[in-house]
Length: 272
Image (tube, rainbow, N blue to C red):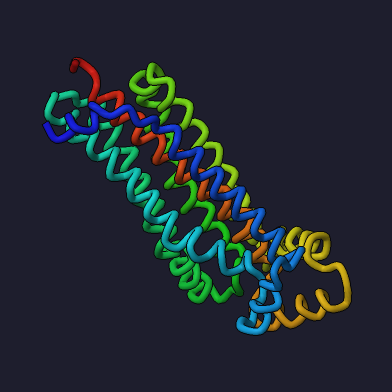
C-alpha cells in the first residue's frame, strides 16, 4: 500500500507544530532586534531601500503568509485526503465523510487566504449598495462569509466527534487549531467591521497604540513612522500582519500536525 513506508517511520507529528512555534518566536525576536534595537544597522539598511522601513511589515507578508501558510494548509489538505483514500479503500464511509467535509472547509480557507475572495466580493456589494468601505452591507456580508466556512468546520468536529476523540494527539491539535483560527477570525472581523458605521476600527486604534509603545522612542523613529504612513496603513498592518498572521500561521501548523497525526494513526489501524 502507498502508506506503508510512512507507517514504518517513527516521526512524531508534534514536531511540525513545535518547529512552527519556534519559527514564529524567532520571527518576533528578529522584529525586536531589527526594528527596535537596530542590530548590525539592519534597520538603517531597510530604511534606505524600502518605503515602509519595518522588518515586520515585509517578513510577515513574505514568507510567513506568502507562501508558507499556503503550503502548510495545502499539505494539511493533502494528508487528510490521503487518509480519505485509505478510508475509501476500507469502505469506512463515516471516516471518509468526516475527512472530505474537513478537507472541503480547509480548501475554502486556503482559497480565501490566497485569493482574498471575501474582499473582492465585499467590494462589489459595497459598490452596488452605494456605501463606503466596511459599511453595513459589506461588513454583514463578511460576517456571513466567515460563518459559512466556520459552520463547515464546526459541523465536521461536532458530527464526527466519535471518530477523532479517541485519537489523543489528533484531537489535541485539532482543538488547538480551532482555537487559533477562532481567535484570528474574530480579530480579523472585529478589526475593521462596520468601520463606516461606527467611525472607528479596532485595528487602527490598537495598532497605533502598539506602534507608539514599541517602535516610537525618539524623534527619529517618529519621523520614520510618519513617513511610512504615507505609503501604508502601518497601524492597521501591525495588527493584521504581526499579530493576526502569527496566530494564523500557528493555526495552519496545528492543522498540518493534526492531519499528519491522523494519517499516521489511521494507517496504523489493523496493521503490524
